[in-house]
Picture 1 (spheres, rainbow, N blue to C red):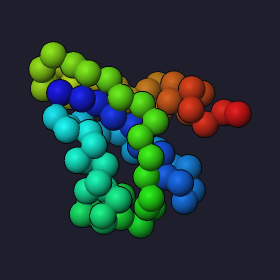
Picture 2 (picture 1 turned 180 degrees about the vertical axis):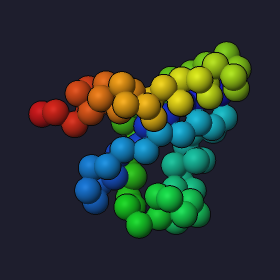
Picture 3 (picture 1 turned 90 degrees about the vertical axis):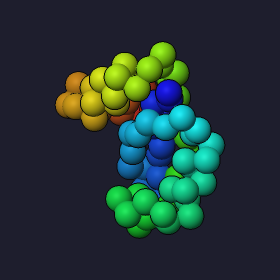
Length: 80
């Protein structure tokens, strides 16, 4: 299972998700099939992590969506 982070090329916002197939999921986001990301297309994958199981992936996804996780992502990917 993968945890992935997308960055909108429209306004640089970040989106965190998890999937078994990140490439297919990116195509779905960019095709407008996900309501929460549709308005901010196109998206680009900026970070991926592989986890042994869904439970570990979900735990990491929740962390990256938390205040500290968002701070880490912004420092790593949004600060020039």
